[in-house]
Structure formats: structure tokens, C-alpha cells
Image (cartoon, rainbow, N blue to C red; front, side):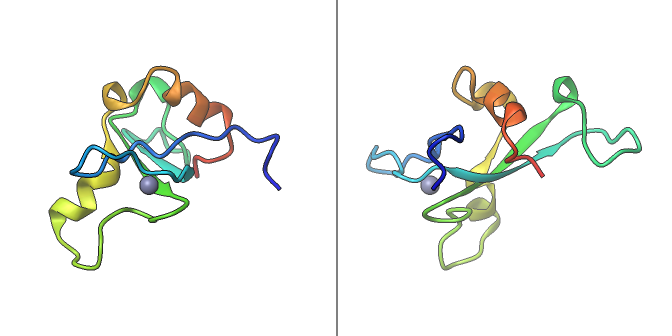
Length: 92
Ligand SMILES: [Zn+2]
């Protein structure tokens, strides 16, 4: 069970306005590397998220547009989500 872990709802919204019922199961931060594995939180340019239900939501047809569905600029994430990502062990 993962009851005591922070659960971040998947930010994906379907074309019909329905929110995905999954949660973020993995995340990756992209930004300038400082020679270490991780980028600094304040320098993150983009996050890529993976959903517990639908992985990257790219669908069966692999298109670039599909690939971008789960990529978010920090300002696109709901308030607090970015900090939650960093406090969780989802970033890797
Ligand atoms: Zn999802």
C-alpha cells in the first residue's frame, strides 16, 4: 500500500474535459545540468510525468504531439504540485 505517500493527481485532462483518475507515478525534471544527476528545482524548464493509469498518455499512435501531452512547464502545474514532486521520491 502507498497510503502514507504523497499522491499527486495526474494533471491530464481529456478532450471532453474529464480529468484522468490516475496519479503521478514517476516524474523527470529537465533543465541545465550542474554535473550531477539532478537539476536544481529553480532551474527546471520542464517536467515530464508518468501516470499510474495511462503511462505518458501518448496513446497507441506515437506522435510528437502525443509525446508532449505529459510534459509541463513548471507554471502549468497546479499550485503546490512542483514542491510535492520535489518532496516525494517520484523524481528520478
Ligand atoms: Zn493520467
